[in-house]
Amino acid sequence: MTKTIAALGAAVTEPGTAMYATGRVECICAALDSLILDESLCRHNFCSYDYSLPGLRASLAYSLTGSNLLVYFRQEFGRGSSYAELICGMPDGPTSLLSLPYFTPSGTPYFDQNTAGAVYGWRLTTSRGELLKGLLKGVALEMRLNLELLDEAGVRIHRLIATEGGVRDRRLVQLKADVLAKPIERIEMDEAGCLGAARLAQDAELGVPTVSLLRRQTVDVLMPDPSSTAFYAARMKRYREFYHRIRGLEC
Image (cartoon, rainbow, N blue to C red):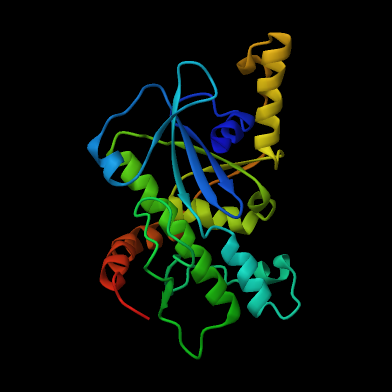
C-alpha cells in the first residue's frame, strides 16, 4: 500500500500517531501495535494492513473527493483566481452550510457509489468564499466521522502528521484541525511516499534499519480553536443524519 509507505516517510512510527495525506484523496493512515479484529471495523470498511515497520499494523480511512473538490471549484467558479486567492476569500469563522462531500464515490466508511454530493443552506446571500469553506468543511467532517468510528473500534489517534500539497496553506490545515478537534503537525516533506520508499530501499541495500533513518522536520503544529471546535462538534450529529436522510434520493 502506497499510503503506508507515505506514512513511513512522514515518520509515523508509533501507535496513536497517523499520517494525514491532504492531496487529491484525503487519507488517514494510523499505525497500530497489533491486529484489531473489531466487527465494526469490517462493517465500516476499515481494512488492516501490514505496516512498513516490523511489528506494526496499519488501518486507513479516506475520502476519494478530497482536494479534487478544491480543483473543481477553481475550474468552475474561480474566474481566474489562484488557489491562495480563493482560500483567502473564505470567512474566518464557521459557516452554516452543511455539505455532503460525495462528489465522487465516498470512500470509507460507506463505500457509497450512488449517493451524490449535496449542499444544504445555500442561499442567494451565500458568497463564493462561504460556499468554498462549506464544501471543504464537508470533507473535514467526513474525515472526523471516520476518526470517530475508528476510535469506537479501539483505534486511538492522538496526533496527526499532515503531508502532501494541502499542507502548504495554513488556513486549510487550521480548518481541518478545528473540525477534527486534534492538533495537526505540518512537516516540510510534501512527497512523503517517495521518501518512505527511499528509506526502505536504503534498508534493503545497505542493511541500515529503516527506523533509524526516519527524521521529521516540523514546520509548525496547528492547534484546534476551542470556539470553532465546539461549533463543529455540535454539527456532527446533523452531518451524520444528513447522509442517512438523503441516501437513496434519485436526481
